Amino acid sequence: MFAQQVAAAQPLLIGVLLLWSAYGKLVRQDSAERTALPRLVGEDRAAPAYRAVGMVEAVIALALLAPPVWIVEAIAAVALAVGFTGYLVYAKLVVPEASCGCVGSSAKPVGYRAIGRALLLLATAGTAVTATAGWWSAGAGALVLIPEAVLFVLLSAELDRYWLLPLRRLRLRITHPLTGTATDGIPLVATQRRLLLSPAYRAVDGLLRSDIRDYWDDEDWRFVSYTARYDGRQATAVFAVPHHDSTPESVRVALVDETSGQTLYRPTVLATAG
Image (cartoon, rainbow, N blue to C red):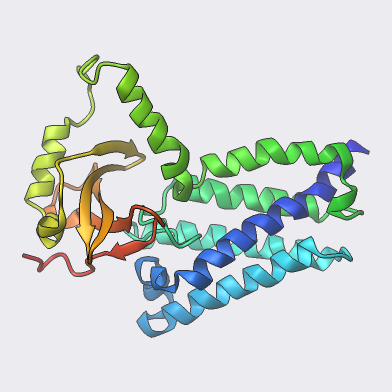
């Protein structure tokens, strides 16, 4: 009985997530250029394909949220999740500098978190296929959506600025920043030296308004942020420095609006910058 209630609740979570994802694709269509779509379908078809995926997501989401319940809706969600997972694996292997483009606001390259989120979506959609009642009849099974939603948040790099970055800044305020500096990791000064020599840094040097403001490691990359200003708007410059590629051309950068999180500027031809 409880398992059926859990299955019935899944379309609510999937529908909300797909609407969020569709909104990002339909509103921020310029994000298509920093995904793997230009490599996969061609430069001219990337934006239309990105928009089409957003429309498909919106249709499936509305079908999942609105009665009556059809098993075909959950099966469509499973197929979509399989497609997402395959695409993200392709992007990580073939175009490792490409961003996920899942919601349209993150410039971070595809990582294991994004793939994990797609697999979690696949698992919830697979559970929804077994539902025999609508999400409004889930009862106590709806409580399972709370930890599932938390897990989705933890796996969403697009939401890091709302919880992860504030936590890091809080940690710096309550602990001495030089405590425990002995580490086997890459020193920040070494990362900064690579940044200063990179075409990416030269491409945005005139837009920077601070020294290094924050940095963190995520899988195979170190991310470094600076305060910046672009076209009269307050922004954050986020550099992505790979751990295992020391060439200056491997460094990537994106300028993100402080308020909306929208990418304002992302140099695409860095090998000849400067």
